[in-house]
Length: 134
Image 1 (cartoon, rainbow, N blue to C red):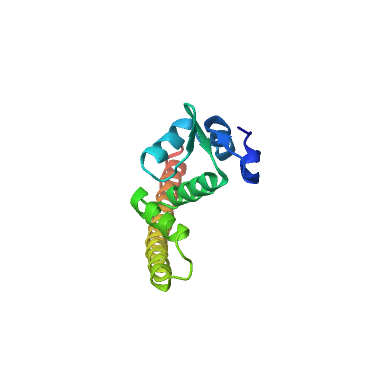
Image 2 (tube, rainbow, N blue to C red; image 1 turned 90 degrees about the vertical axis):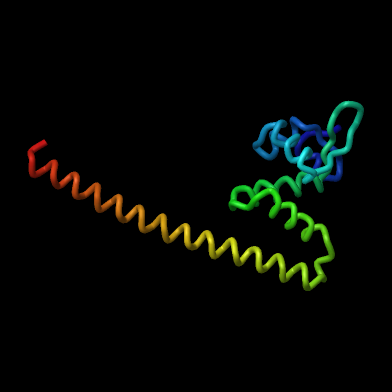
């Protein structure tokens, strides 16, 4: 089995090399395997990860970072693995992305409003401290 970057050349990599490459723990890799999102091969008692597994893990991690559920990520992976020419699947993917974008935009607006309110509250508190000489 090869090291971390060798997996990019079509070789297989061990769990620790892949975890290091992705900046995650081996436990995280085992979790996503248990959930059926990746499918490393077994070499004896060891897991061996292909380039495809690493690409899928990058997509999974990106999906988690963007706030998608594991179920949504599984659906995206299924679409990613399917025929890109399937218009119905691409529409579904685009619709899901739009829904998530809209939700994130609403969250951003709420965060911006909260930050503005907190800044105003902070300014008021500091002004009161200055007036009272503290």
